[in-house]
Length: 417
Image (cartoon, rainbow, N blue to C red; front, side, top):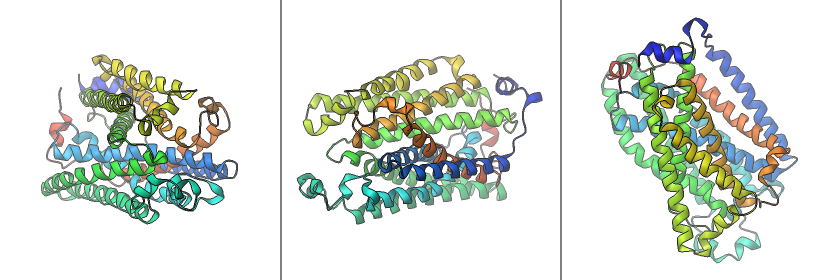
């Protein structure tokens, strides 16, 4: 499994195009601006649906960013060798987190002030009869308060931005001075950061998604979000690395051995996602408590059940069986295919957990993807995604494609399975 074999499998060097990150970043920014603009226009036609589209797009892209944050910290805490090659691209991906924080501000404003009667989080409607007469809301009143919700969100993004900034700074500085001290700094930061990031990711997933139906209980919801975030981040990492091989940026650096390692991680988190998702479903259905089962009752009837079956077979069985085969895990083309497949179903998984919460199957069936609502969804995805890609490319041009003076870089380049 030589480097040349992996290179030629991705794209023959003689026909490889020229990578122009500055030009690509400008295009990404334009796409992001147009997408966000169309999403704003969508508010004038269906404010409720546009708000949900924005929430789903934001959650999807943030899950990728947070997954990359965890991958960087896990690399440092385990002192991994092979992943040194891909770490720099993950660090560039972290550049999108502050911009995602900015993009969350309009969602926060809409959620709190509900312009035009647009409701995202029902429990923020403190003056409504539904909330005012709800004993469960009063029992959780302190947590489900506007001021505490605001403080929590500031803490979430503040923690992620600080972690990303210091991890990137230490890594980039090591390229300049070559000091091994920065490796130790990042390892200590990762040790504390994993705890902070785990807690903030869990509570953020609860605040933004689970509390859409705040009567529902699940102690596994944060782990479900984490597993999906890791799967999406791994899929994007595979696509990025294969593209960089195609553009000859990773020539002689990223080999089939690294691709195989990423494939093994994708298989592991596919099984982990299935375990968490099934455990949550099994425990809730087995207990058969109405306060918990209603979440699945809505999703097991009407057209939502077909999306549920789609996730079962498309998000678990197919990727699981596909990634069992060694040949699939060392083929750049096949790995890009399964990565794109996983990203599509990662998005559908977020849809499945968000849309039925506020819109019934009669109001917004799955088949409405063929209607004008699909335009709002795609516009929001392109808008948030364009900004994320722009942030990545903007960071990409500031430093080397790999951490050239990391103590384990030679070990990483010569990695063999």
